[in-house]
Length: 281
Ligand code: AMP
Image (tube, rainbow, N blue to C red; front, side, top):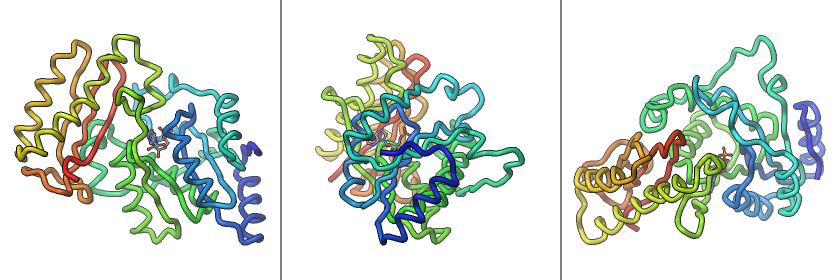
C-alpha cells in the first residue's frame, strides 16, 4: 500500500493503472476510519483492480464555528486498517495541495442542497460537491462508493454525476451500526458516556416510526410529533430536524409511502448526529 500526498503522483498512478486496463474503485472519506468506512472499502475491493481511499478533512464543507479543527485525525491508525482491507493507495493531500493560493472554482447543485442539512449548514454541500468533483478528476474512478448514512449527500452526488455527465458509477452502501443501533460515525468519539446512551434516541426513533408505518399510521405529522416527544425526554438532545421525504426529490411528504425516508439530525450536547432510513419496505 502506498500513501500519496500530491495530485501529480496520484494522477501518475491513475495513468499507470489505466494503461494496464485496470478498473479503479474509489472511497472518499475524511478519515478516522470505522467499520462503516471499512464496509465501503471491502465492497470497493471486490469492484476494482486498484482500490483508492482518500483521506481529506475538507475545510470547504465546514461552516464557521463547526468542528473542522477538532475533527478526529489519525493517519497512522487509518493506514493500518486500510492495509488490512487491501487498499492499494491512500490519497491524503494537504489542504494547500487541494486548494492552492488563488483557488476560485466551486460546484453547486441547486434545490436539493437547500433543505435538511443544507438548511442548517449553508455552504456545506457546495464544499462536498466541489471536493468530490476534484477527487473524481484526480482519481478518475470507474466506481465510487458512498454510505447511505449521509443520505442527502448521496442524493446530491447522484444529481451532480448525472447533470455533469461524469463517467463514474456511484454506489450507495447500507448504514453500518453499532450493536445497539447507533449509526457509526467518526464524530461518535465526541460523545461522553451518558451522551453515547442518549444518542440511541436517533436509531430508536427510526424504529418507532417504522412500527407506526407498519400498522398503518401513515400520517407524517403524527409520526414526527411522536418522535419529537420521544426525543425531548433526553436531557442533552436538541432536534435540528425530523422530516419524512421522498427518496429522490427530498420533498417533504404528508403521507408515508414506499418512497418515504425518515431523516433526522439531532444535537446530543454539542455533537450533531444524523440518521435515516426507509419507513416501508
Ligand atoms: P466521512 O468520513 O464521514 O466523510 O464518510 C465517508 C464515507 O463513509 C461517506 O460516503 C459516508 O456516507 C460513509 N459512512 C460514514 N458512516 C457510515 C456508516 N455508519 N455506514 C456506512 N457508511 C458510512
